[in-house]
Image: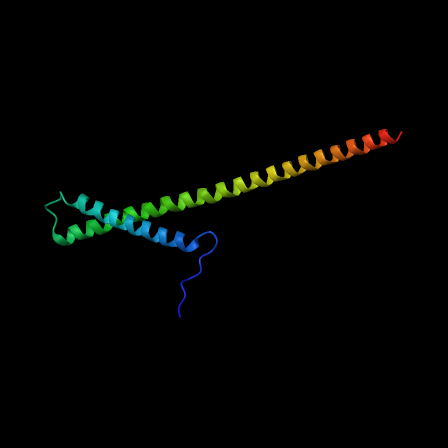
Length: 117
């Protein structure tokens, strides 16, 4: 019996499906815009119209891909930056917690010493 592919904890399969569907929508949009662009050019032959539509759609998809790659790169850079900030905050919180514990322990030891005198 075939099982569906296992999904990672972060929903990798859902992300892939969503990305595929979004790209297919982008292709359909580019093709529609290409038809709308070439529509008013009534003097074009059928072959010329198809070539212009094909090139217009290809250019639109090329630009969309470049935009997505820039966005993905920026997201990765932000993630790295925020992870570094998070680690620094964790170190600070740990240092503060240890300092407070050390001070409390010292105060308790001092109080016990004063009580024994």
